[in-house]
Picture 1 (cartoon, helix red, strand yellow):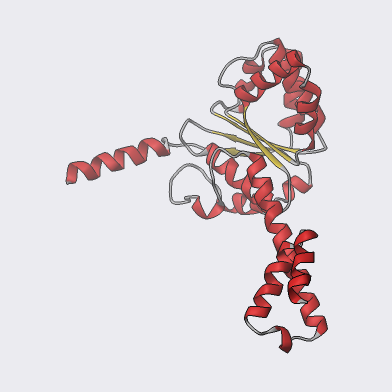
Picture 2: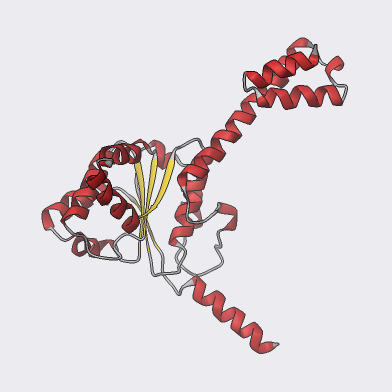
Length: 251
């Protein structure tokens, strides 16, 4: 009878229940549990299994640049990184409030890693997240306009609770890029949250976007009342490289 029950659970895709039921049989704990306790054990195991699979799926779909989490962040490096601010952001209430986050700083200072860590935390909280290199995303969307899949791709971006646009402003935008940026920002304004990382300070984003009217409209929607993280200091990658070289010289 127990094998029949397990088979039915598998057919119904209750994989968490299958593992809990089999474990209880192997450990001979089934006979010691009341009906209520057994029911609670099975339901809790199934809930945990589905929740873990959902998180794994969201992490996979997010396509983060780094497998980053808050435990890996370094606060002992002088780069104007506010630990209290990061801890508040880790609660992901800014996503619930539909607020944005702008992270600026020189190359190698850790902007993408921090954004990925926040995105990872958002997945843990059950939010849908998409990470994208800005230039690659815009190139993909330009091609989507040509093959007729643009509306589908834009709709996918719009559904994300958190969109991470990494390396914004590495090159000036053309008319098509401005149009795409405006549409993304307009769709998400007041509805979803966006994290933007850039090597350039926000004041220079006007020049990158190009057309004054579009720049004003875009920045008015993403900058005002956004959380800001302006990192300073030397590249972490450069520091690590210098440290390795120093160790080699000592040897």
